[in-house]
Image (cartoon, rainbow, N blue to C red):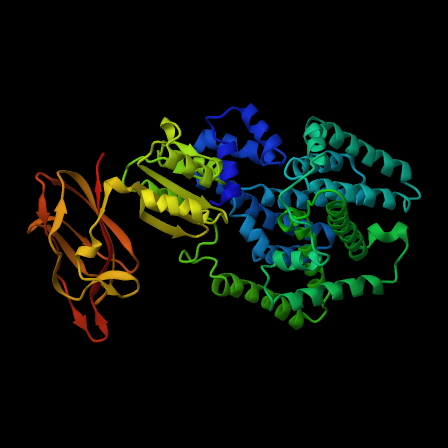
Length: 574
């Protein structure tokens, strides 16, 4: 899970109170509460896991395919509904946010249902649709703040269409007045939260570019350059058919599926884009692509309508099949979206597994993401102290030992979510003089470094013959490699060996570790550098000899097993 999803996990932790959840939504994670309430309830019943959180989004994503079918069927016919459902099945945005523990796909889903009953209400003015429209619109409003623009667009659409009503204007006005009253009263409890967000004077979002609409549309479809020209042509064809239709009177708009769909789409997209754009330029930036997911169903419907308007059955099928094929190829092959070998989200979990791997609890310095990281630290029972402040300031305090909490012989510095590992050069120089970096690893958008006081670390790498093979390493081509005599004091140590190897017959080198000809352990190397640890005890002060016995050497055709040791460290127990 990446940093935003970890907001969800921490805020909806079953062990925290409901009041704390709403405090988070007020101060730190400005979203309406519906998604978080649902997740918190699910956690209380099924357990506090990533699968449960993302499972809710997955369910919403699957249901959204059905909802798009219903919307297309409501606008025109079953054929349009089926096309819209197919497009939703392969839509990059829908798939991506159906797999994320956030509220965006829920906003997509309830946008669709809100428009289904909005259209029914416009056409039928039946009070049973008032209640269903009000219900789904309230669910939408409680899903994401950008739903306010959708509801504002619906209000404007209804207001304009009212003037086209000659015989039923009073009924039309009364019907939508009742719906508006229900929605207003239902959303009233959350209005104070909305007003707090309106008064924000700063936000993390950057000001939008004038061409934001083009980049957003491209993002909805995964920036698929092969697909974009087809989609744009279909939208132009859809608009051409709208303006070619002879019926242009306002009172007849709702009787024309084509014109009604265009009227709704134009106003909904316009308001959702223009108001946030203007406000971003004048006050505080608030326009961001994933927030506008509420207009994605509208684009999908317009594209589906463009396909359905093609009269030639063969061309119709070819275009739809091409869109589905290009979308699938982009997801599965170009983006390798379903390949585990290519992570796409911050590897907080893998970083936590790394720092907790040896079962020892060392303090952590984590300047930017300590609060979010708390979910995985708790999951892996890593209960060490976490310093959530400037890493330079904390390191400086450790070096100066300004108080008992900073008198540390071992500590981690970790970071994620774009936070770089470098320290101020002066601080880093002081740190390197007093501590040794004994373990480090980079992950996707995350990293971890373990520092140990030099008084506890004995680096014996130089007691072997070194070779500049991809860095200073000890190459082992075969047989036994022996160190020169190494002076060691009495004590308990962790022998840390950083190694890698090349395989033959799909098996990597196997090394036996000998200390004064006594076996202390063995390990297999791997493709990349990994660390093996062995607990040893030196019972008398003496010169010792360390050996590595390469016992499965093999050269076969173009394959040759070889081992490389990057570093060998004796870490003394305190």
